[in-house]
Length: 173
Image (cartoon, rainbow, N blue to C red; front, side, top):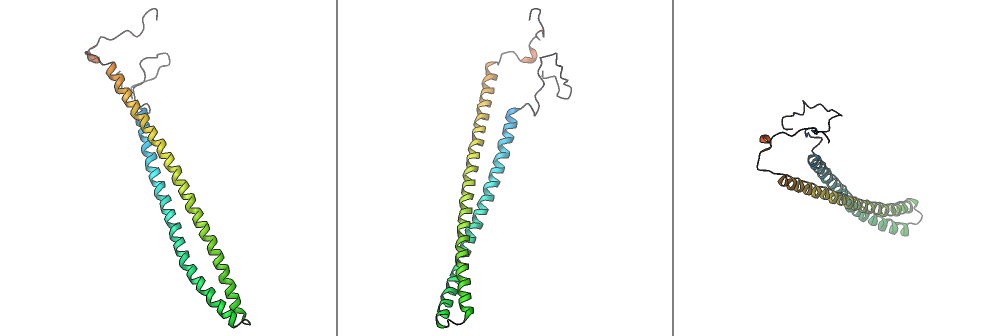
């Protein structure tokens, strides 16, 4: 089996033994290691992106608080001007416009907070995915431990290369 090279191997459906030599496609632990490595990289990348989005939402909410201060000041000024000069239509229009801007600003803050909530739920989902990656890693470790155990069970005093070869087919099999 050790003398068989992957490039020289030709499958024969009538022959059950020997099995094909191991290659990258047959090495399950390598495949699972690759999956968990890729999964961890993408999960980290997604968590970073989600955190960045969350920061944009928080920064936007802070900026809106500054804008709201200016709107409140405008409402105060235009309320006083509208009381003193009720016949000047531009003061009442400006007051109405600022009241509408204040209302819209509150809606924007609500949307930003909803966005932050959605980001947090997405982060929770990513942590759930990370738990599954860790479970796969645990399975890999169990498989490796079993492989070492099986190897030690079948270990002999005589090297496999020095053993007498056995018959492939014995009459009566």
